[in-house]
Length: 437
Image (spheres, rainbow, N blue to C red):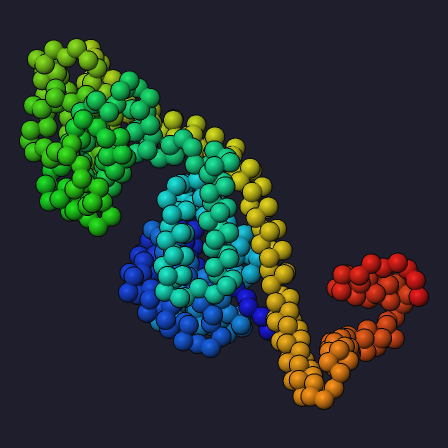
């Protein structure tokens, strides 16, 4: 029947956050889930791609119908709920096209986002490293990773900040002449603040400080599995007490605020006197990522303060997204090229079982004739025996093709069909059709 690929998935377009959270899959759960699939004789392997916005199970199978039932039953058993209304099911070439779009970032909430390519690679390596990948899955994921790399190196799909948190860091890199010599204070350790902090960490700043109303939130973040090693090696990282943030404000060149407070955390009547008392010579860059605003607008009106609000950053993001959208056409072109290569590879794979059988048949005939020749060598002319062996091998290898070719020509409905059969035969055996009889 041949190897086929199937995919059962759900993402931010089809399922709620509550449902997506249930299929986040820990490492142990992935191993158990894939193990349950591969226990079935018609499953040749599987890869689970699980991110914040999607969970997709890629499976190699001998039977699409049975494979689909297996995936649905196992996922519904894992979730303990009906998932048919929030999932999508793809096969073969549809899967290649989809995974290539995923790896390039075209299928992400934010087009071209950089993390997804690494997540695709990690999902593949997780299964491949545990022997869960079939030949088709190995080939598919390696091609998807290559496609993702090409999209990022040959187009601008991942260039320019596409979220306000990234835009804030990009803006600072453009405005501050030597940002590595800067001291930065991040106010708020929520999701936005964490993204800003992680991106600022890469800049190797002179000092990177963070403050939050609850200090435990900071500790939970910087000691988390994903970032603890990065922060452990950062000598510039400081934690500032929440109540000290205003009186220490003159110590910093940059302040980025992104709390969830219902009111400003930096009021003008408290911050402005502190800034004026400090008699700053260098500008203070302030970025407010919060809604409602964290920084009162009056603070931005005093000398040597450059205040950027959420609207300023959203304008930058909107311009950047237009740029990325213009790059999509080039990415689709790369995907089209890679998909054609994939289809060519799949076509050649269809001949593999035939080639294996043909090779085995040739070896079998060769062994039989070798044994026959060895038995005949005693008391016989060696040259004649070897010649006869060669003749018999040739006849046995060509016997069935000769007979079947004649039968196919006899069964042909037209002269055109006869020509097509002959052309295939000439190509198959690497012969030149000289048009003779």
